[in-house]
Image (cartoon, rainbow, N blue to C red; front, side, top):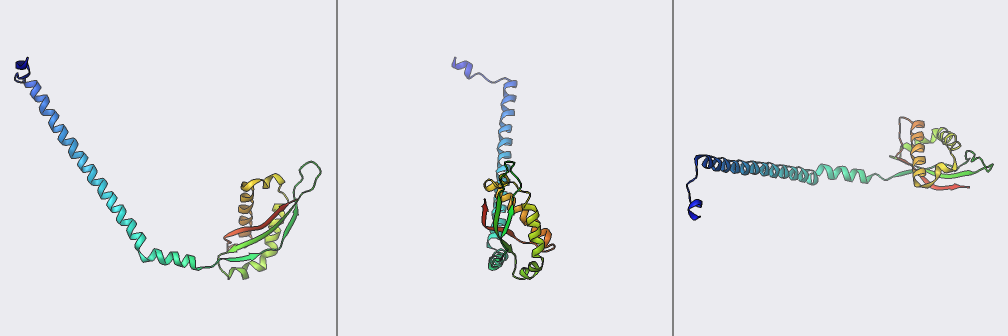
Length: 170
C-alpha cells in the first residue's frame, strides 16, 4: 500500500495541485491589502481625532461657551382654570415660570412684549385638560409648547428655554 501512496501523480492531479497553491497566495495577498487599508484608515482616523482634541480652536470655543452666564427672567405667576373634565369640577393650574435668555441684552427686548407672551400662555393653558399634564412627558410637551409660543411672540429673538419653578394643579 505504501507503493500506491508513493505512485507518481497523473497530469490532472498535478494541475489541480498547481491551481490550489496560487489561490492561497492570492487569498493571502488580498488579506494583506485589506489589513493594510484597515490599518491606514485607523491611523488616519486617530490622527484626525487627535488634531481636533488637541487643537487650540476647540478649547477656546468651549471656554467661550462656558464663560457666558445664564440670564433668567422671572414672569408673573400664571393662574388659569383648566378645560372641563366632564364631572362638573373646576380645576386650576398655577405656574411660576422663568425664561432662560441667551444674553443680558435680551431682557430689555422681552420686557416690552411680556403682555403678548402672557396672553399666549393664557390662551394655550386654558384649553388644557388635567390629563394633558400627567407625568413627565406631559410637562415636557407643555414646556416645549410654551417655548415655541414665547419665541413666536418675541421673534426674531429667541429664548433658550422655559423653566418651571412651580406647577400646581388643584
